[in-house]
Structures are given as C-alpha cells and as structure tokens.
Length: 466
Image 1 (cartoon, one colour):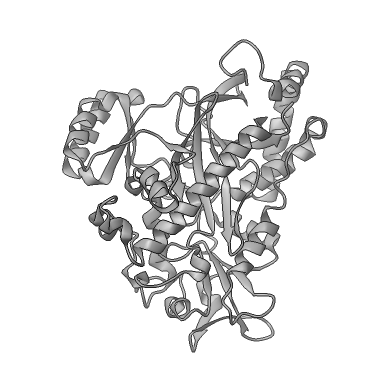
Image 2 (cartoon, helix red, strand yellow):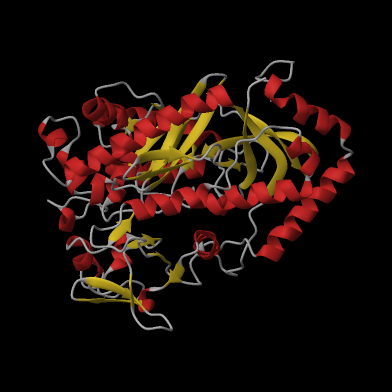
C-alpha cells in the first residue's frame, strides 16, 4: 500500500482514506457480515485427511488489493505469453518432441512424469489448445518485480471466490466500490462459455452442448463446481450421468439422452475413464478417452496437461518460452534449484534452514519445508527425505513477499499475499479477466497462503491509474 515507504501509493489513496475514517468496530461488523453471507451462500471447502471432516469457510478480508491498469497490462501480456508457450510445449511433447531432441528439457523429466499420458502421443488437441483454463500464481517482491510461483494447468480452482468476493464487496461496501473505476470480473463466465464452445468438435451442433463434470458432493471444491455450472447455465454432471455410445458422449436428461460436445472436467486424468486409466475409478465415464480421441468431444483441460504444471518442469519455462516463441519471458521464474542435479542438491542440503523446498508434484502447501520457520528436527527429517528421493524436490529462496493491509483480530495489519489470475484460451486466442484471486496468509509472518493451511482471500481491483 505504501510501496515500502512512508507515503501511500496514489492508487490506494481512497482506500487509505476509507480505512482512516472507518471505526474498527464497523470493520469488525462488516467482516462478520461477510462471513454470514458466505455461510448462507454455502461457500465452503473440505480438507482431505481432516479428522473431523468439517466443511470450512475460507477467511475473507474486506480490505481490497488494488492494482493499477498500466501495471496490470504488463502482467496480462506476460500471462498470455506464458500460456501460449505452455500450449506449444504440450503440442510438441505429444507430437514431434523437438524440444527433447534439442536437449533443452531432459527427456526423462517428461517420460517419467506421473502426469505424462502415452495415450495422447501423436494426438492433437482441438485447435491445438491443451490448456483452456490456466491459473498462474504470481508473487510480488518489489515495486516492479513480479515472479511466477507456479503454473496450474490441470484443473485450477478458486475462480468462484474471485467472483463471490466481488459480489460481497459490492453488497457490504458499496460506497467504497463506487468511488473507484474497477475493471469488472463478472463477465468471466460469459468468456469461459464462449471459450469452451469455440473448441467444440466440428460435428457439434450450432450451439455446442457444454457440461461440467464433477467428482461429486464429497470433493473439496464441489461448491465451485456447482457455482460455475449455475453461472455458465450448463448441466453439472457426475460420471454416472454420462455414457458413451458409438464413440459419442451422451448425457441423461428427462427428455432422454442428449449429446455432449464439450466437457469442462474437474476430475483428474487418473479417474476420467476406468477403461483407459484407473480401472477402480467410479468417478469417470467408460469409453470417454475413446470418444475424445475420435474427435467427438472436447475435454477442457485436455488429458495430459499435468506435465506442464510439474514444479520441476516449471524451472525450464524461460527456455520453453524462448524455444517456441523466440522471445524472452516477460514474467520471470523464482530462482530455483533442481535437487535432481548433484551440485544443486549439495547446495540445498547445506542451506535448508534458508530455503523453501517443495515436492515437484505437491499442491495445497503440503509436502514442503519453509526453512526459516522450521525447527531443527523438522529440517533434519526433511533432509533425510531429500537424500532418499532428490528427484522429487526443488528449492527456492525465501522471497520477501509483498504485503497488503488486512483486517485481522488485532486490527489492520500487513499480511503476505500472492495472486492467481485466470487465463482462458480458446480458438480465438487468450483472455485474462482483470485481477484474479488474491490469497492472504492470515497468520502474522506466514508465507503460506493456501486455504488448506489457514490462508484467506480478498477482492482484487484493477483500477485506472490516477
């Protein structure tokens, strides 16, 4: 908010004025009202492995994060460039594999990746779009310094919170919202529906039928699945609602079977089709991969995209951008050590107390070590895991993440944040909804923003520069 100095940045001037003029008890009342709204709407999530299995609310912070339009324009260009390179990379590794022959990416990193799908070798995704919905996590470390923390190219979540956060802000703080010219986010679902329909198979009807495939009620993100299906105006289906006949996917309806052209799937590859992947899956649709390979249905995102959001593959993104696009990456990676390389492993082991170490296939803030906040015992235990399977880990410096003001129990205080913008890619190109989801580490000093680890969210405003 101050850029690290004493003066408030211009884009935050009205927010600062509002904070100074609003009594703490009114802020507390608004926070309570926001929680009641979220409970009434039903915005909850579950944490796998939680003993009481209770549904939780993600804490919502009522102080918005503000980004200027010029700054956002730079981020938008970098995000579109990155997703374009990711799609080119996936086209290549399931096709001619030129980047592997050039030696820029180790072949074993692709072939031994648990998310690499040999079934997709030699296959083309419709319009060469593999990743239709991408969530790119960004962190800020300085006035002009944004870094990509990770790429989410499988089934990125969180967009429902981006949309609901804006709705709640407009209901609870209309005066503050109306005092700014904020870029809208509510058109996200219109853009998403247009994106999905644009990649429908050639045999689809003039208005392609889209369905959202969910694992069901007990999935931790089920609220988001039902929310998006409702906003999109499409059917929310489970595996048993779909069937494949003669290579075509049909959906059960009260009027009889109806062909489905595009499936926005929120199920991991392993569970999509028991005939092709895990035979014990009861979540998927038998024969779905066959229908996809026959070109009769489009899956968003495509099968096999997980190779691109592997944290080891992330380390090669600057080279991937340069190889396919012939230009330098506009958004930089966080400096990263690949523990699969002996010199890097030696360095990481010698500096565990200073680094953040992550599993290459980890998510949700699990399976990681934040060295500066870890005990000696935790560091020693993690060192053993690192020695046993160095290929499974990467390490990064502990960045000085930017903070935003947050309203917490002790009042208004700085808390570390990241940002997840959502990039939509269809037959006509890519679009980014202005803002995205800001996640907040609600605990003082914490760098972990994941909801499963106690993180919260706040509304993200992209406004005209003063």
